[in-house]
Length: 178
Image (cartoon, rainbow, N blue to C red; front, side):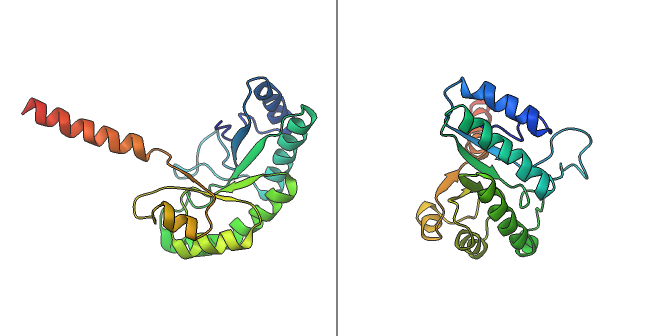
């Protein structure tokens, strides 16, 4: 389930939401470090400071464990989504590695890095963490076999199937209308 950023800021409220989630039968969540709510900076929401996100992540893990829920927590960092200029992603990799280590220690089961598309940087991140790494397929990225060769464990498709479907539908509609 896409748990976004827990639908709350405070760890106690995030834990309450995990308790609610436990009754649904969900076995895994994406839990992102993007701060949702308020006025975004330049159109982009900031990410939580690492210490705060670790506290929130610990609350998710502790609550799931207490409920007897073997929850897969796919800790998502939005560092790369916030930087559209992929030539600057090299500068973000050390932060992503630091977050991966902290998230793993706090109970994450995997690391999701949407927006990271450069093969060498993906491989560097995969090699620096013991967590299985999840990327979001984007135009211009290696195919499944190429991503698997880099060590990627999971591929999400995000909005791209919808975007491609709507573009195709638009072309069909235009053809039909002549």
